[in-house]
Image 1: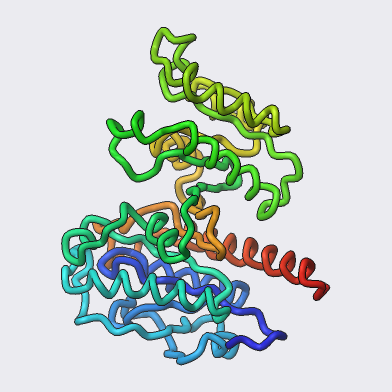
Image 2: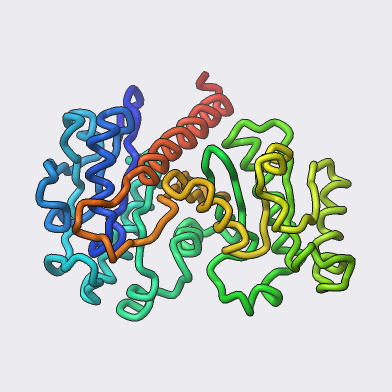
Amino acid sequence: MIHPEQTAPVIVTCGEPAGIGPEIAHKARLILGERVPFAFLGDPRHLPSECKYVEITDLAQVVDVPGDILPLLPHSFSGPVQVGTPNPAHAQSVIDVIYRAVKLVQTGHALAICTSPIHKKALQSAAGFAFPGHTEYLAHLADVKNVVMMLVSPMLRVVPATIHIALREVTCTLTPQLLEKTLILTHAALISDFGVPAPRIAVAGLNPHAGEDGAMGLEELDLIIPVIERLRARGMNILGPSSADTMFHEAARARYDVAVCMYHDQALIPLKTLDFAGGVNITLGLPFVRTSPDHGTAFDIAGRGVADPMSMIAALEMAQTLATVRTAKKGTVNGQS
């Protein structure tokens, strides 16, 4: 357990070891040094050959590790890795690492979780992983029903109301209840975690031109607008629904603090276009902080030493910042400061 005078480190999960997760964790440590204390949870055999690491048995030991050496909390896998190709024998261990990281943050040993990318199909095929992705699995482990995926960069914050589902399933999954919960959670997080006292939320329409008064679809009239009007009546500052093709240029972005979109790509395409290397995935609604780089396993470049660590670095910095804010607020509420 971390002593009160110490700051717990962030725990970084290994993710899919055949991808770039181990490489970008190594590079992030070299760049960040001791500025963001973190430990890598995984198998040392999966790290790049040039990575200098030290195995630890307790996260409290991270503060004693020099900044050019990666603190590693070992988690044994069934064998070595072939970069670029997931090994079915590793699937359950990838899941177990996520589970272990959650326990570490729930017990106060870790400050927050930063998850490296996983290969969802490999986990589902080889280990019966019953979740569409990290977000849903973390909600299950935390025993919470309502979570929201927010993607953040210095230029844009976006939230997709529906996440890891096929496009054809969006219209039946998007309900007034889901949209309302998404907007409420997003509004609360902007205030509590990001220090935005009066959040301005822009809402995208589902259809082209936001339905054009029903000419291109009725979801805006029947579903989205009634939800917006109910929340406006409760004092929330919500714009829209707006046509998604006019929401993301510079002048439009200046008018809001976050854009809530109706489906995955409607939110992620503009963010990744504006800042592909610096985006961070955050799960709102969890009782702990979880961030992740906003990219996948990148099997095509794994093992070549060319992976860009900037999104991992941004995710680690964001994890530390958000968790520190939460810890400070909890201390204030408990009369400790």
